[in-house]
Length: 38
Image 1 (cartoon, one colour):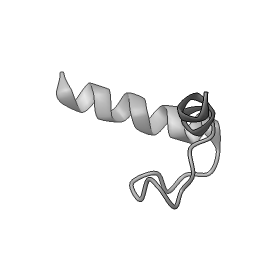
Image 2 (cartoon, rainbow, N blue to C red):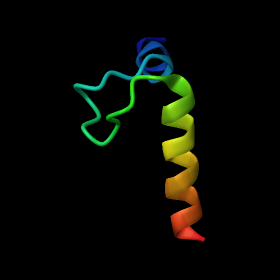
Image 3 (tube, rainbow, N blue to C red):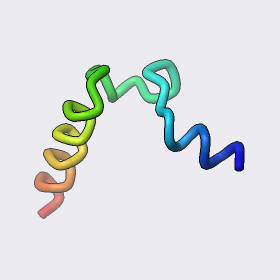
C-alpha cells in the first residue's frame, strides 16, 4: 500500500529528472521519453 501511495504522488525530491510540477507536463515528459526510445 505504501509503495502505491508513493507511486501515485511522485515527489520532485525523489525524481530529479521531473522538473515539471504539473501532472500534464509530467505526462508530456514521459511521452517524450518513450518517443525517444522508438
